[in-house]
Amino acid sequence: MVRHVSARIVVLASGSGSLLQSLIDAADAGTLDAQIVAVGSDTAGVVAIDRAAAAGIATFVEDPTAYPDRDEWNRAITARVLELDPDWIVSAGFMRILGPTFVDSFPRQIINTHPALLPAFPGAHAVRDALRYGVTVTGCTVHLVDHGVDTGPILAQVAVDVLPDDTEESLHERIKERERPLLVATLAQLIGEHA
Ligand code: GRF
Image (cartoon, rainbow, N blue to C red; front, top):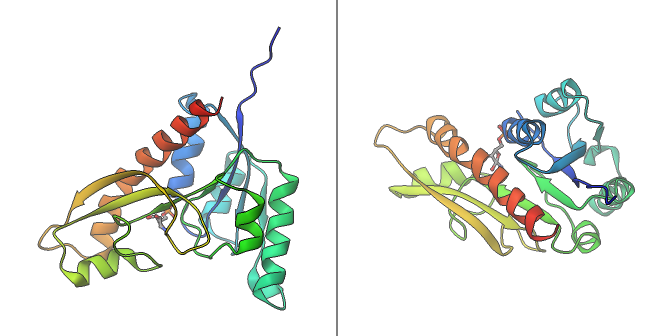
């Protein structure tokens, strides 16, 4: 008998982890044929780590401030994730740039989700930047990670209207409502294509 093996996923997250939660829920429900083998963060005590622990998922923290320089941190987080032997790595609100050591260790295996329609508004303040620019439509993008900042090949996008009275918070929350199912669906498709 051939045993079915779910895809091994490592999720990296820095904040509230609502995107992580959508992955956990989809894996639990069986709509995502995946096993989240670990959740890693760059910051101790974040809600994302609590969510993982509550779901019985292994966690780790690699804080860049604990290392003498960025290269050392990159080597440490690369070694940590290599040990987990993931099929896919999901950067879901992970607010650090993964360096070449990391990216080259997992070619075309890292996906990132970004709260804007790339290539518009890359970087850490995408929602604020879109609002300040005055666009009437923004959205979210799921893409493969390469050596640039939010530059890798685009896998999927969804548009979100900007409303006249939007604040950064209200707009980001509406984007995330679309971003969560987009991330789950895109990862499910990748897993299916590589099964
Ligand atoms: C998402 O909008 C992600 O694209 C951005 O940070 C947000 C993470 O949200 N980089 P959460 O922590 O999963 O709620």
